[in-house]
Amino acid sequence: MNVLSQQYRFDERYGNFKVASLQPGHAGYFHVGAKTIGYGRTSTGSLEPRADAILYDVLRDVRVADGDTILPFDPEEVIDNLRCERYTESASRNGPGTLSALARRSYYALRPLMPDRLRRHLQRAYLKNWTHISFPSWPVDRSVENIFEQLLALSLHSHRVQKIPFVWFWPHGYSACLIVTHDIETEAGRDFATELADLDRSYGIKSSFQVVPEERYKVSPAFLDSLRLRGCELNLHGLNHDGQLFRDRKEFLRQVTRINQYAREYGSAGFRSPVMYRNIDWYRDLEFSYDMSVPNVAHLEPQRGGCCTVMPYFIGNLVELPLTMTQDWALFYVLRDRSIELWKRQIGLITEKNGLMSLNAHPDYLISESCREVYRQLLQYLVQVREDRSIWWALPGEVDQWWRQRQEMRVVKEGNGFRIAGPSSERAVVAFACLENGQIVYEVPSRRQEMSRSCAVQ
Image 1 (cartoon, rainbow, N blue to C red):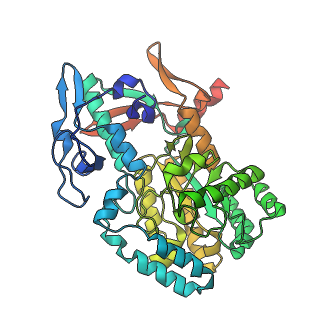
Image 2: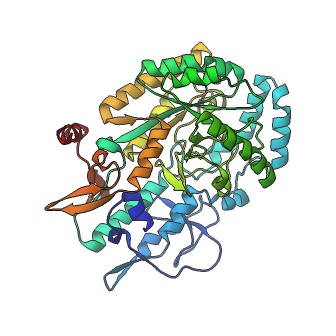
Image 3: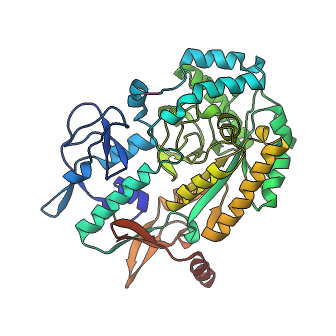
């Protein structure tokens, strides 16, 4: 299927564009519409090596010939370049890059000897130029969603239809989704984990915990059971959190063999790389169902980049659940912010695109009462958002399962209406993409209507 029908699970003809012959040479940045940035090759216009340049808008060169819409870029290539951070090769040549291999090895070799104050000072020093990074867009980048919507608008025009039916993004008509995750980095964080799980439960949240199985702290069966009994998921957070997992291919294979063994031992389906280091070309060796290692915007991470989407997506057979909200350690110790204003702004931007709110809050950094109070304020705000906007609170594994099921669904015509066929289709709803005042809007059955229908079917 083409990339647009894969995203929306609608009839493939709606995304069946033709692509003009692309110019040979390197990829570059361009605009897809007035403000959205794409990265790839085009058939017309100019490509820029930097995202902060004056960019050519390729939509002016869309053509219609013999009933076919001909695009001056390949949507699949551009979406893949963003989701898989292919554009970072250009960014590293022309702007802020990532920590060098030598500096990384030196830092992590000395890290156990550093007092917290020195470690945080070094982190802030490295990340100090983050405000100069123009792309991805801070604090949430929605380029992938914007490109999809531009393509939807073109499809509506080319097929001369007022609306296109598709499989809604979330089960039972939920408007968006939230997952709460906790990476355990130290012994102190491990000892606080059950108390944090209880705090989450007091607000109605079931969370996942990512554990480091070697060197950092002891991971006993009793500890794992204490979290399972609280309804938590257990995932792997690397092998020993030494920052070397993606140092080179040989080291990766050495560590990943052990990581996969622990995953089988713990019954873990999910993975998050320590320090969010990643090389998605090596993900095929991870024996997991889903990954949570790719930030939406990585300005405040040692490895810069970002997947530019607020939706889950596939990397090979892995479902990627991108980290779409700023981590607590960056908020508290890099930005030195003890409020939830940034998180509230990110929640608003994500829910506008009906996306995945993915939060990572470390038990290690929530032990102090001042930081814990900020986290409580966030949980209280999330309760309000759930009530106001009908948000699906889920475990990462539940989102992984849903996204896989949705990929097998399709919209079929039935009488004068439509229905969804495929596994677990009773959870899915038919939505419609429409064009109003030049903007894509979605018509979705209300949560109350859908639950009434579901109960009637049962």
